[in-house]
Image (cartoon, rainbow, N blue to C red; front, side, top):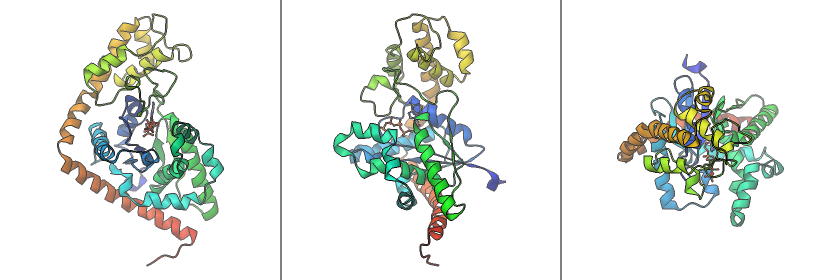
Length: 334
Ligand code: AQP
């Protein structure tokens, strides 16, 4: 029975804060999959080295993110949860796949262009190669589905291209994965600029909310959220992106369909909507905040869990890596 289960894989970079955007677009779906899939989740700590990190903060943030994922419901008994840097196969497969990926393809990636513009003095090879590392992450585990936000769709497509290209050359080697995007909340927008993605590393703290944020701060940020010059609530993504974003957040946070939230709040004042949104976020994350605080007091448990996760991931990854090397004609040691 166990062998028939499909595999899901996803990861999060330990930069900035885990936002309600990351939660709604990705983590919330990871949790829903746990019981029915072989589930593998990583802290993508090699990916975020493409941007300069302060080592002391980076180490602390890595562990904090790990605890936030467990607190969000990623029970390590039900999934493999690990740090990407603890499984060397990711870097190794990246090199091998680099030889099947074209520079032009990488230069065309929107994220590469955006991040190059933001880091003009540090357009490093890692930034260009980021999608190949992501392809290696996913393909190492023969993943069927990758639950992610819509911002990662382009990288998902290149992952599929690389897998298909390799399979065409060498015969079936990789499962060709599919992106899985939530029907509601695939892209949560900044509270300060509702046309831009809510971002983990937004320098404006009022644009995003962390999943472990203090209730007072959540209420304040929602009160200040940018809407428009009208006064009544209406769902209209084109003309009222701020209000529509709040309705989407309310729907996921209160575990109600978007339709029923729209039905209920259409015609309400912005103040009333904002109060309901703030309350729903505070309520949704209260148990997660409490569990996070508890976990952070038990560093030994976190490190032991990370070690066990890495060892399970490394075992699976090594099987794919051996297969890839064999197909490519690298000499095997018995
Ligand atoms: N605003 C969002 N709405 C829905 N899903 C989102 N995701 C990210 N932002 C939103 C999804 O969260 C997962 C982890 O993404 P990531 O680690 O690449 O982080 P990020 O938030 O996308 O990072 P930023 O904002 O670009 O900041 P940096 O990289 O500078 O730290 C992914 O599944 C993503 O789709």
